[in-house]
Length: 325
Ligand code: HSE
Image 1 (cartoon, rainbow, N blue to C red):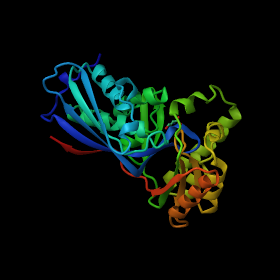
Image 2: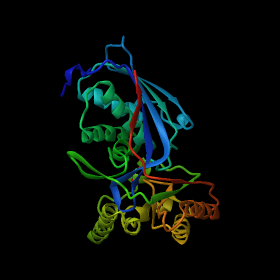
Image 3: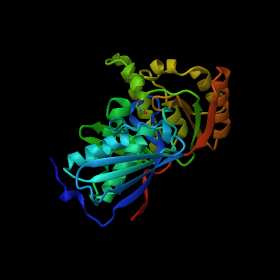
């Protein structure tokens, strides 16, 4: 067991971290690509229970979606990640976690990842450890076990690092961050249904044909090339998935119509956000209006009788400490 100096490197006992919504996959980058989306922000406050003297957690929930977050600690991504962190470093402390849940739950916008990411960034700072970013990402990814059934890092990495992130490897965890082009805007359509990430992962095949893998590698590579070149249309052209999305599309009524409408309104690329049901389009705002694309996507959902919240956002930075005391 790694022990970090009893885990106390400063004199603070409480911290507040704000952490953004994220989108994962971007089509072909299943469990690899993610981006921080400046649409919704959770706040995670951690407070040390000074008298406690043992490993112990308390959880308080608030915010617009607080009632939708699991209260049971083993089912809560923030609690699970913090517990794992304390165990890993042999730290015997009591921590109260206050989670203000403003990111919609069950929509594919990285809600559980944000809770875990905010908690891990906060705990690292509160204990004065200053762990490397990749280690923070790995610790936060552990929290996803309860919501997704596996510790995928493509939401927690952009929630921590901001911008566009690719997971180069899981063991050891290595995340590479890049800045999306400034003219990249996101049109987002959040339909009035929920999808469980765990279930949406359970339906995926364990093995896939080599031809589909080759197609995805080409598309995924062009997303990275587009980011590096600052070319939104190359990014968008890569957002076509041969493996996961065709299976999950069945969970989203209106998937084909929404996609078609987004392209007609000027989107460069459209994909399911994470495990859905949110659909996310990439727009070059020098060539089309993201608000028009989002509106068209919402119309697509309404054609199949689904209410939908359309919105526009930009990629954003990652988790930030708001205060420490
Ligand atoms: N890569 C994950 C999945 C993201 O698609 O299951 C979940 O938000």
